[in-house]
Image (cartoon, rainbow over all chains, first blue to last red; front, side):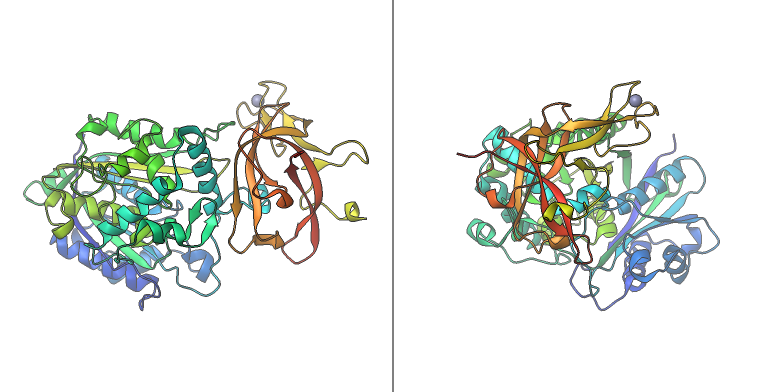
Length: 381
Length: 137
Ligand SMILES: [Zn+2]
C-alpha cells in the first residue's frame, strides 16, 4: 500500500476575536504548511477544507475552493468537510485515503473556524431534537459522564481538575495557545460551576484559528528528512447502543483499537498523545479508551504525572483544547501539527525527548449518549 | 389548568389523569424487540415496523448533574438533568429531573415520571415537559 507522509504543517495562533476572517485564517495556516513543505502549490493534487460554522453563520458554501484558490490550489478536486469537532481530522483521513488510492500524490488539508461572532450561543453538538428540547447542552453531557465516573471509581473533583492544571502548565510553552498562564488547582475548583462537577476552567474555551498540513505519497516524501509517516488513520461512527456505558466509551475504544491494529503497535509504543480534552473528564476517559491505563485509572495517571511533560506518556503537551481553545474544525488539524512537530524534535520547550510514535485522537458530535464521530491517527518517524 | 398547556413535543408522554402517573411513550420492534425512545417509525436495527408502546413511568438514576449556565428554552436556573434507566424496558433515557429536588439526587435513586409546565417552546410560550422526581422522605 502507498505510504503517506506529512511533509508540511502550519497553524495560526488560536485566540478570541482574531482580526482575520475565516478565509484569512485558513490562508495563513495553508501558507505556513506549504512553505514548511517547501512545495509549490501546483504540486498539490487534492484539497480538503474543514469548517463547521461558516455555512450556518454566513450562508457561504464551498469556502474551501475559495481559500485554496488564494494559495494557488486550483483545478484539482477540492472537498468541503463538516464532521463536528472531528472535521479537521476527517479531512486528514480523506487526504490519506486519496493518496493511498493513487488519486493524487500530494494533498493540502486545512481546518479553520471563526467563532468570535455575535450571537453564537452554547453549541449543542447536533443532538437529536428531543434531547436538546430537554436541556442537553455539551457541558451537561460530559458532567453526566463525570458524576458517573466518580460514582464507579471514587474519583474526586480535585483529581478531575488536575487535568486543567497540567494542560495549562504545558501551554506556557506553546506560543500559539490562547491561555498560557498557569492555574492552580484551587483556581480551577473555585471558577464558576458550569454543570456539576465541571467548573469553567475545566471547559475548553472557544477560539478563532486555523491549522493545515501537506500530505504526500512515499514517492514524493522519500527525499525529505523531516517527513513523518502516517501509520494509521481511522474514522468511525457511534454505535448508539442503549443502554450506553458513559464511562467506558465503546466508540472511542473501537476507534483507537482499530488505529493500533492498522499501525501494528499498542498503546505501550506511544511516545506522545494529543486527545480531545474538551472537558477535564474527557481527557480522563480518552486516556482510558486509548489504553494508556485501565478503566478508572485515568485520574491516577494524571496525579502521578505520567501524562505530564517528562512523564511516561505525555498527553496534550500543546496545552490541549483546554488551553489552546477549540476552533472546532481547526482542532483535528492542530493536533496533528503538534504531533508532527514533536516527532521532528521541533517543539522547543515542550519537546518530548526522543518522541518517535504519536497518536492524535478526536471525537465530535453528540447523540444518544455517544459521539457521532471519532478519529484516531497514528504517526511515526 | 396547567395540564391544558400543549406538550413541548407530540408523542413523548401520556397524561393519565388524577391518581395514575403519566407514562413515557416509545416504540418496540415486533421483529427484533428493540425499544426506542422517542418512538420511531422504522427500526434502526432491522428496518422492521415498530409498534407504539408505553415505556412506563418508573426508573433509577444512572447519572445526574445540575446545569448552571444560562438555561435554554426558559428552563429554570439552575436545572437538573440525568440519565434514567427505565424499569420496564431497560432503556437509558436522557431526562429532566425535578428542579425542586436539586442537591438531593444520587445514582441508583428510584424516580417516577411527572409532567408539568417547564420551560417554553423557544418563543416564550410555556410548554409541558416530562421530568423524573423522587419520593424523598
Ligand atoms: Zn427491529
